[in-house]
Length: 285
Image (cartoon, rainbow, N blue to C red; front, top):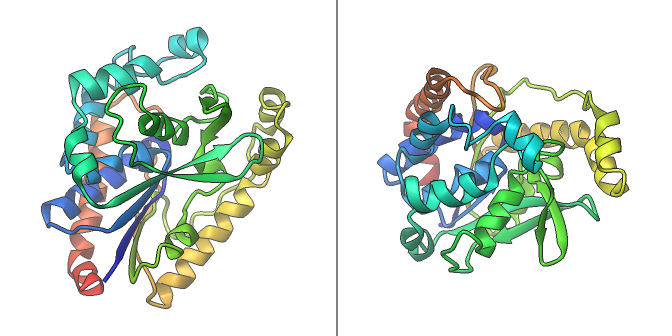
């Protein structure tokens, strides 16, 4: 029995995912392979390092810290989430990412980023065993979560990457290719959510004018996303996959400064996981 886990992104909607995966870990529910997109990668990596509560803990503690995320950082560095702090000081000094457990865990962990030159997704397997802030894996995770306009493209081996959610928001088809017998998908939008065309496309065309294929990807992102939502629902109804999702919009800011809001959405994820636990265990058996 080979089991796969898919984690959608969505900025601080990812607190919902944190709640779900903490319940999974508390109940010793393991997976052979996982893929995370954007926040699904930055927060989802904690299931491989087996760090229950870490995603919620550091976000609540540092959400109002100007070193974490601020307009000042955006103006000064081009990244609204301050890179040296978020991908260096925080995970390697303040609330340590358990790298030893991450790399010793046999579960394969992939993150998705979007290649600016092609506008297509790239799936990186985090297995470099590089335990430094400049390591290849953490840079791929950062690329996966680097939102267009408010983040600089991440240069990896001479290629530029941004948020994986732009090209593959819910990588269910990628996971289906991993020869899994059972797949759990964690969505961060309700079942009936329909994405609309990007409202600031003119800004995207300005900022990414040197990357026309990336612009095309973002112009058509709502079509891709809505198609994926429909496919997930179809596979769920056929009994091929199991889905945990919020029952209504999470209504949380992309850069949330209220710790109570982070806790609220996290608790929604926990409650959804607990409610689905008996059926999920039966599905995975």
